[in-house]
Structures are given as structure tokens and as C-alpha cells.
Image (tube, rainbow, N blue to C red; front, side, top):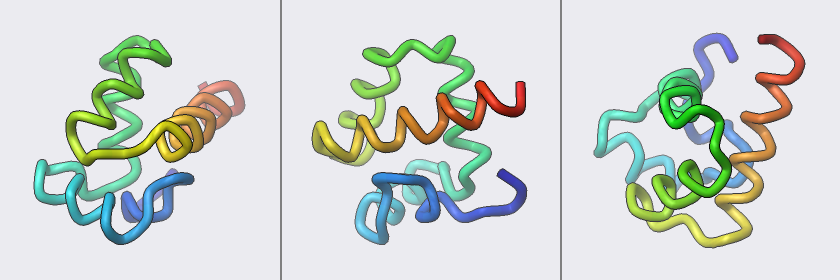
Length: 75
């Protein structure tokens, strides 16, 4: 995860990344933290992503899968 920008997460491009940054989620690890706070719950994370930056279903799924795989490999 390192010091990657939020825009480097799967499903999150410049537009959604900008919206997340506006809410204080500027780095990928900050979004990972939110994912963990939500106990890696898929539905809760996707709802949060939709409410926070307006992500559509595909974007939500891509980002969730990316973070889930990272956690499975490194936690």
C-alpha cells in the first residue's frame, strides 16, 4: 500500500479520487483504514463508497475486491 494516492486504488480514478480527497481520504491507506473500521464488510464498505464519492456498482466492487485481496495477502 505504501504511500500510494487514493486514485491508484482499483475503481477509483481522478474524479472519485478528488471527491474522496475532499472528504479527507487522500491516500490509499486511509481508505484501507476505513475498510478495516467497517470490519471488511462488503455491503457496508460499498455503501460508504457510494455515499462518500458517488461510486457506481462496478467501481464499488473493484475497490472492495482490491482491498480485500490486499488484506488477504498482507494481514
